[in-house]
Structures are given as C-alpha cells and as structure tokens.
Length: 159
Image 1 (cartoon, rainbow, N blue to C red):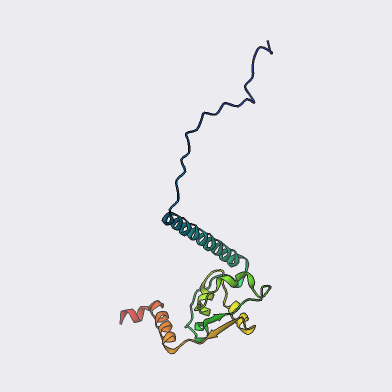
Image 2 (image 1 turned 90 degrees about the horizontal axis):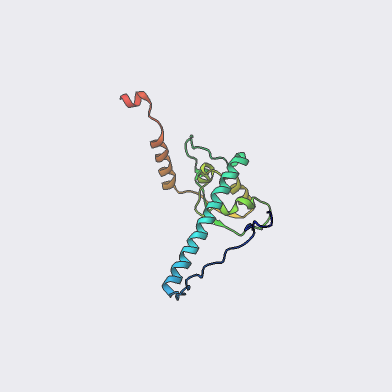
C-alpha cells in the first residue's frame, strides 16, 4: 500500500512559458534622469550615514553632546572656519573630520550633537584648519539674537 501512494514532495512544476520580454532603448534624457536619481540616492545614503554617526558620537563622547547656549555670546565662539586643509589621514579626530564645514562657527559646533568645538581648536593648533575672527556686525547680530531669546522678567513685562 505504501508503494501505491506517489509523493510529490520534491517535484517541481513545469513553468508556464513567459511572455516575450520587449527591450526598449534608453534615451539620453532617460539616462540622465536615472543618473540624477542614482546620485541623489547616494547623497541621501551619505547624509543618513553622517546623521547616524553624529548620533553615535553624541552618545559615546561626552564632549560631542549638544549644549545649549545660555550665556552671552563671546567673540571667540563666533570665530569661523576659513579653510580646512588636508587631514594627514590618521588620528587627530579623523572620524569626525568630514562633519565640519568651512564657514561653521565654534558655537555651531558646540550646539550641534555629534560635534565639539574642542576638535576645531585642536585642529587649529595643529594647523589643519584656519580660523577667522568675527566682525563687529556679526557679533552685534548674535548678541541681539541672544537678547531677543532671553525670557522676559515679570517686572520688565509689567512696566
């Protein structure tokens, strides 16, 4: 009786014939659009990787956690990165090097999670970045912004 039953356990079904696949030619406009989307996808992946790396640095390195600005802005914290020279390739904070940009201030680095202003000052001492002091107009604008963001006291509001 056991031999009379036929098993279909490891058998395969015959595939149905597929419809013929029609190949179409890719025009130059289509190729350019495909390349543009591929480039945008690569940039998004890099942005996501940088964001994830910054979050990891913020949790693992205490100095890389974001700090809020409470005190009056100082001129030295408003100094900007004028030029980033080539990094030697090993050590000296190479892991976070790609997160800093020209035009970023020390204050920006301090309040951004995953970055620290100490990296920039260290690189400046090792001549990897060139810093430029803030102008009087930039300082006055930052001071006015800080003044506007301060909470008003009750007696000032009542007057």
